[in-house]
Amino acid sequence: MNGGHRGCAGRQRQFVGWRIVVLSMIVIAMTGPGQTIGVSVFIDWFALDLDLSRATISTAYLIGTVGGGLAMPRVGRAIDRYGVRRSITVIGALFAVAIAFMAGITGVLWLTLGFFGIRLLGQGSLSLASTVAVAHWFERRRGFVIGLTMTVGGALMALVPVALNEVIDALGWRSAWLVAAAMVLVVLVPIGWFGFVDRPADVGQQVDGDVAAENQSAMVIDGRPSVTSDEAIRTRRFWVVAAATAATSMLITAFNFHQIALLGEAGLSATVAAAMFLPQVLGTAAAGVLTGVAADRIGMRYLPAASMVLLLAAQLLGASVDAGVRAVVYAIVLGATGGAVRTMSGAVLPAWFGTRYLGSIQGSLTLIAVVSSALGPLALALAH
Image 1 (cartoon, helix red, strand yellow):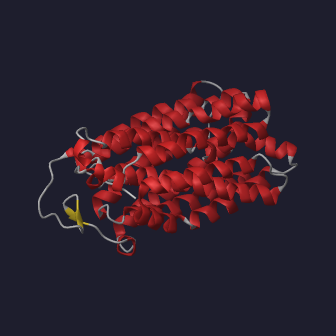
Image 2 (image 1 turned 135 degrees about the vertical axis):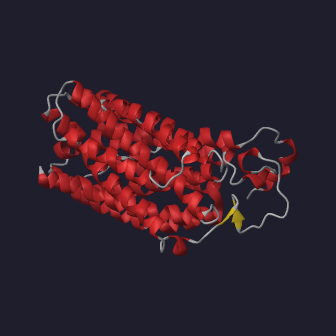
C-alpha cells in the first residue's frame, strides 16, 4: 500500500505532518452534510414534503445514527489495519453515494436508511479517520495541533449549512443533496489517495519531525506503551472521557438539530437561524486552541471537568435565548463546548493509551458519542 511513499522517503525533506493536518481539516469540513448542522437545514423540508412530524424525523435520525454508531469500533479496527489513506479514500466515495441517496428519499423508511449512511460514513467514520491521522504524526504538540485541526475544520464546516440553505433556495432541497455529493466525491477521494500518508515511518520520518530514534520498540509509541481497545475501556480514565463526550454529544446535537425551529421561536428567520452556526465557530476556535494548549502545557486531568462547565453554561443560555445579543452569546458558548470536548478527547486518548490501537479505542468512544447524539433530538422533540 505504501510502497510508493517509501520509495520517495529520501526526497521527503519537509515534515509531512503539517500537510496531514491541512488535509484533515478539509476532511472534517467535508463531513458537514452528514453532521447535525448540515442535516438541520433539511428538517423543515422533510416535514413538509414527506408529511412527517418532527418526532418521526427525530426517531428516524435516532435509529439511523445508532445503527451507524454501532459500527464505529469495527471501523476503528479497519483504520488501524488498512491505514488512514485507504480508509479516507474508500469512506469518502461511499459517503458521496450516501449523500446522493438522500436526494431520492420518499418516506420514513428511506429517510432512516439515508440517515444511517450519512451518519456512519460522515459524522462517524471520516471524523474518526481524520483524528487518528493527525495523532499519528504529533506527540509533544499533539494537543495544540488537534485543537487547531478541529478549530479550522469546524470553522469550515460551519459554512456548510449556510451554503446548503442557499442551494436549497436556488435549486430545491433534493438538488442540494446532489450538489453536496458531487463536492464530496471530487474533493475527498483525490486527497485521500494522493495526499494522506499513514505514518511518519512510511516516508522515513518521525513523529513531530524528530530525528529517528534507535532501538525503538514497535509496541512503544510516543515514549509509552500502547494498549488495546479492550484494555483501555476497562480503565476509569476512558469512562471519564466517555461520560463527558456522551453528555456533550447528546445535548449539543439536540440543540443543533432543532436550531432552525428553536431560534425561530425566539424571533429569528430561517436564514439568520442557520447563520447562527457561524458564531459557534468563534467559540469552537477559542476553546479548541486553548484546550489544546492547556493539554500540552498544564496537563489533561481537569479538561473533562472544564468542558462540562462550558456545557452547563450553554444549556442555561439556551433556556433563555432571544433574538438579540443573547442568541449570539449562546451560539458562541455552544461552539466552545464542542470545541473543548473534541480537542480534549482527541488529545487525551493517544496520550493515555498510545497510538498503535488508537483507531479501535477512538472507535469505541465514537460509538458512545454517536449513540448519545442520536438520543438528543428525539428527547428534545418530545420534551418540546
